[in-house]
Image (cartoon, rainbow, N blue to C red; front, side, top):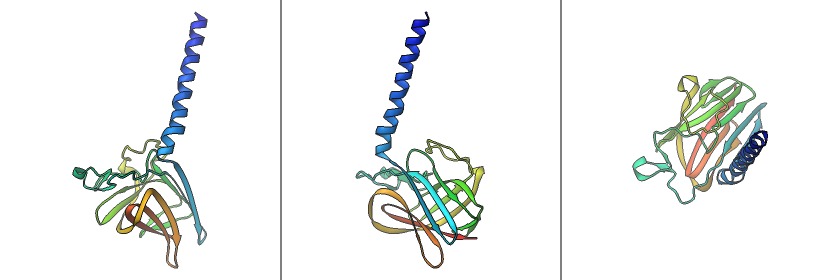
Length: 182
């Protein structure tokens, strides 16, 4: 009897290892994990997300047209896990005060603007589920600009004399969120 239990546990262990390896080697390649950081004016920003590819698909658009990310619908700003952002100091996030800390970051795309939200709900691996909106810390609206076609979604940082710019770039879409030290 003990031998059957031992064999059963061994088979279960091998199966579990197989599932974990499949997730790490196959799923991660489709939308690899990315961690980026930026420092300027005494502020450190770190963002973690997964980078999906366009692969010939319509990215932003109407749901009836088969858009991967339809207008007016929640988007986790990447793939797989929910996107998280950390600020080392209090910031002005596109005109709204945000305290230092780590937040879940998401968007609701539109044709001419995106709503970008910061939420206190953290540690969500499959960010496909919408956040608990009652835990939103801030939600801002920022304009959409056109960009050169980009195959893989990226969050980039730059700075100018007025702010740190956090850009979301995918397909032919660029969304810029200005961040300033408080």
